Image 1 (cartoon, rainbow, N blue to C red):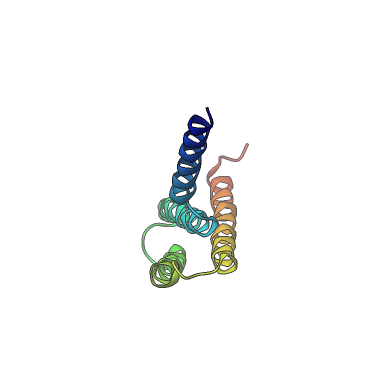
Image 2 (cartoon, rainbow, N blue to C red; image 1 turned 45 degrees about the vertical axis):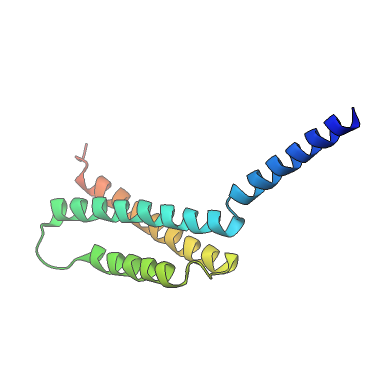
Length: 119
């Protein structure tokens, strides 16, 4: 009976080690979250560009262009430094992306209000 118990405990230990090894670290999850947030911001920027062009036309200033360039700079930084970045650095990048998304949301709300018919 003790041999069966030892075999069972050994199997549970091996299963726990395999599970722990395959589980992403906090830093890996933080990096994935930053990349997901960057994808969402990029999609939102494309929507904003389309909305602005619908209201103001495609000529003239491109207010979304600078935000897109900043997004590219952040993606390049993540590509070059993301694997070694600390949780704090990843948190700062994520906060920057979230702040940009909030600003774009505000701009899109203003555009929607401007396009809404006056009653």
